[in-house]
Image (cartoon, rainbow, N blue to C red; front, top):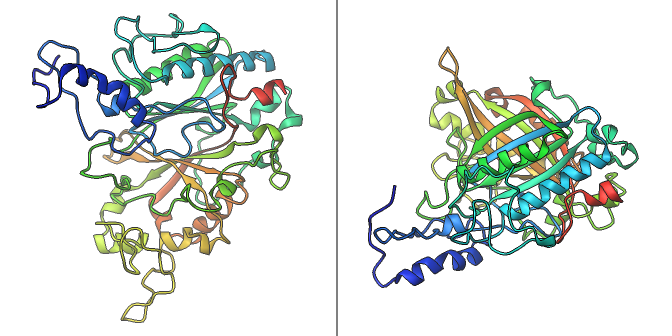
Length: 439
């Protein structure tokens, strides 16, 4: 179906069609003005990509994409297990196929007249399109839409491929937490893939391509689908909300923080302190948790009570100690009644770095909704993904504190969990994990 609207005044068809390339360059700054303008069709003429469709994130680089940038509107988290008999060589071939496919799918621009799946330009080795056996044309006509695909290795991968000598010490199993109700069938895995995009068909297409490329080498162990607010849905860029209606992510570490890289990424040469080998340089560790929100119980609370549980105003995210959303939380602030402005079991207090010896992690989550039970209870919540250079210094101490004293824990249930070593990125002609598998 075409939109029969005229082009905006003063914008020629040539300029309109040219916005795809221009917006592609601007799209490197993901989450900025994406979605602010929409290209309109000129009667029966082709519709140019708008800023959401043409925004792209480079696949190649010192670090993998999908870690630091804002979470996209649609996400798929998938774990694979190697099939019996798949060895280190087979795993290396799979990671190369996957990397080549993502390199193609994330390339900016779509050339008119090319066959479905072909992106502008060519990749190393002359590969200029997805193999026809992978491509189902689902995303034909769409731009990259900020597509990112991130790959990681689970602890079990190393035993299956004879690489136990390269197993990072930081990939030790997570401890048990009192609040866990984990389903082992939806936890862990040999390989982990995070897919994010601002278009649902682009994200699904990437998922199908990777699944097809994995045949005969790895099968899906579990899959979880999530979402966030669509770029441009608000009048101005702002922190997103979770399914409890709370602004979520205000206190995330920022790349501008002096110690950001130290907390989130493994340094060059690896890290002896965390047991991270040299092949993990530039990488990070992802803790993945499926956290069900007990929304019916939560919704029975008054807004004032919800705010006390979180420690922030629901309307604008400002801390109950005063100020605006970005005002630092004052944990020592006392109200006129002599009580702490931020309750002792408030989530922001218990999770604060100051309450956990400085421990911090970069949270990059998706909400999920997997239907409504026969009792009317929604199966919904958060696909929690936390990034850190060392899980024993990031996620583990914070979760232990939350597990024992967070007022919010009464409204949450942790149903699945995984920890994955996510290596650094790759350059032209390389594949993710090459330093591990060929080093």
